[in-house]
Amino acid sequence: MARRKYPLRDSPFFRLQSKGKLARILQISPAKLKRLAQLEGGYIQFQKPKKKGGSRDISAPIPPLKSVQSRIAVLLGRVAPPDYLFAPVEGRSYVDNAARHIGAQAIRLLDIEDFFPSCTIKKVIWFFQNHMECSPDVAVMLARIVTHNGVLPQGSPCSPILAYFAYIDMWEEIDVLVSGAGCRLSVYADDLTISGGTVPEAMIWEIKKSLYRHGHRYAEHKERSRKDRAAEITGVILTRNGVTAPNRQRQKIQAVRENLKVTKSAKQGKRRPRPIDLSCS
Image 1: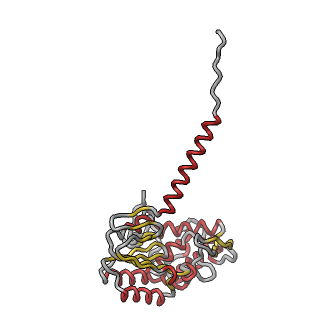
Image 2 (image 1 turned 60 degrees about the horizontal axis):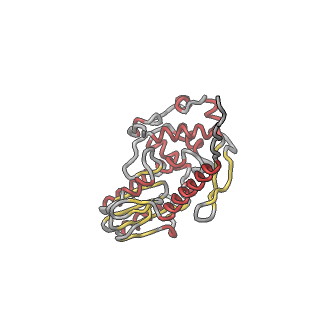
């Protein structure tokens, strides 16, 4: 069951002015908080293959840092999200993200290129200082704990939620553009889906300009447009009447079922009948 959400002003980070209180909120000592904020080499670097080719640079935090980052992610995750945000939001899934657009005639799909590496420490400080109204020293300390080499690291548990909050002004700007055009928006991490009776090109152009103003780029090769036909959104096939799994996923499910049948038959074949006891008592 999803946890109850509250307004941003009810967050324990809101108007936080003391590093001592920050330590208590993060459930660590002030000394450990200071060490983590000044930590060098707190990440393990490796590459992870992408599903469609290529690789992604991962910066995985060491356990003490990951524990504190997870705590920050949990607390930020309790802030009530807007209707258009689906990831990272507890209780909302990639299926819900696609289902938001059921009944739409036109679909436009945009993807932000290298999203986390484009989210800077400057914007993280801006969020904590201007939206959370933290004191400058608290905002900087939090930003140092959650960033690596000046950006949000791919591999940190709090990067997904901070990628939204650090650019909340951009997301709100895009939502105004979309709703002003009579369309519907959904955001799933770095995937944007816009739908409606029609999706005006002028509005899409304004969204792209907004992304650029905030230091992001859209992936041209991933941009998709659909009109009066099924569209794949975050791994789900959207039709005018509902959502369904794509053929490749159905094939995987069928393959798993067939393997289970074979495994079950093999196990049953290995069972030997118990010998019948013909001795007299």
